[in-house]
Length: 164
Length: 143
Image: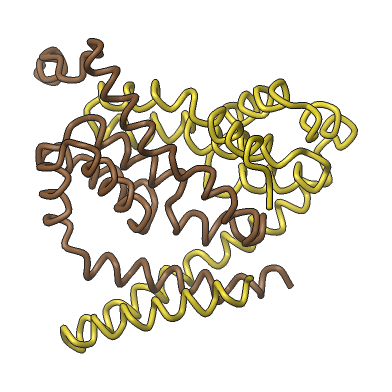
C-alpha cells in the first residue's frame, strides 16, 4: 500500500514537472527548488513530531483509553473524543500524535476519527490567529457553527460503514 | 525506520505543492466558484480545498479571494472544511507518518462528504437569517 502511494505520488510529481518544463525551464527549476527547500524546512519539525509522539504515547493513561474510548464506547466515546479534540492545543502534529497513540492504546477507530476531525476543525487557536484576521468575521463564525456536528457525522459514518 | 519510510512521500508532497502553486491559475478557479453558486460550486470548492497545498497562510487568503470573486458563504465554508479535513498536504506530511496509509485513506473517505455537507448547512443557516453580510462589519473597521 505504502509502495503504491509512493509510486503514484512520484508519477504525479513527474507529470507536474513535465508540464512545468514545457512552459519553460525556469518554471521547472523554480518548482523543484521551492519543493526541496520546503522539504528541508519540514524535516526537523517532522522529526520532533515523530519522537514527541512516542513520548505522548507513553504518557497517555492507557487504563482509561480502552473503557472510555474503545470500540465498545459507542456514541459516548465519540462525544468524549470530540471534547478531547476541541481541548487539544494546535499545531499540525499534536492531534495526530495523540490520536495515533490512543489508537495503539485501544481506542476505537470511529472515536479516533471523531477526535482528529474535531481537533482539526474546531482549532480555536487557528480561528483566532489566522481566520479572523484574514476573513470577514461573520463568515468565520458561520464556518465554526456549521462545523460543530461534522466530527460526529464522520464518526457515525465510520461506525455504519466499518473499517475494511 | 518510520521516519525514513515517510521521507520520500514528504519530499513528493513538497514538490507537488510547489508545482501546483506555480501552475494553478488561481484567478480562474476564483472565477469558477464565484459564478457557480449551486452544487457545482460546492464541488469545485471541495476539489480545490483538496489540491491546495500549504498551511493556513495559503488557504485563508484564497478563501478571501473566493469571496471577492463573488462566491457565496456556503462555497467558502466548503473550501475551508475541505482543506482542513481532506487536504492532501496535511494528510501526507503530518497524518500519514502517525497512522499509516490504510487508516488515513479510510478516514479521508469518511470525511469526503463533510465539505459539501458544511456548505449546504452554511447556505441553510444564511437562508434562515444568519447575518453574513451585516453592514456593521464594515462600519466597525472605521474608527
